[in-house]
Length: 141
Image 1 (tube, rainbow, N blue to C red):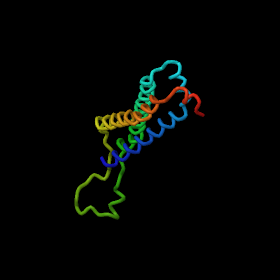
Image 2: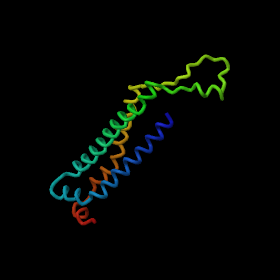
Image 3: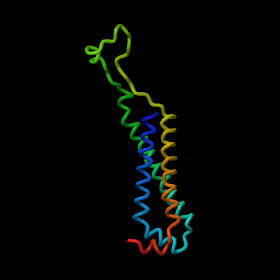
Image 4: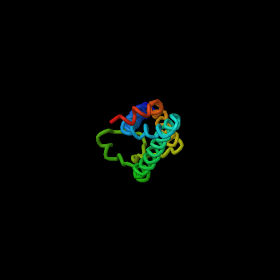
């Protein structure tokens, strides 16, 4: 759980970085949207939706790629019989083939946590975008 929590923190900072850079690069476009009548809350919703969709797509792709990458370990396993010569087991009967196990409910729960974290990390850029002044945003280079 500690490793997944650490990965969640890294992913959250990464998503926050992507969304902030997106905001800085699209300041002029967001200013034009505000100038033609888009409400600040709609700009904030746009960035929140972007963060949510970024998390949803990233979690979905990561979940599928993770399941594909671990399929050989689940299906074939890893034989550790060669290790018994160097590390004796002391008369304990063990299976020398170690297999991975899928825990789909847990994996889906973690994917949902990452989607939630990406949506939460988009709050700051969304609020920042909602406070943009149209004229100053259009003038920015």
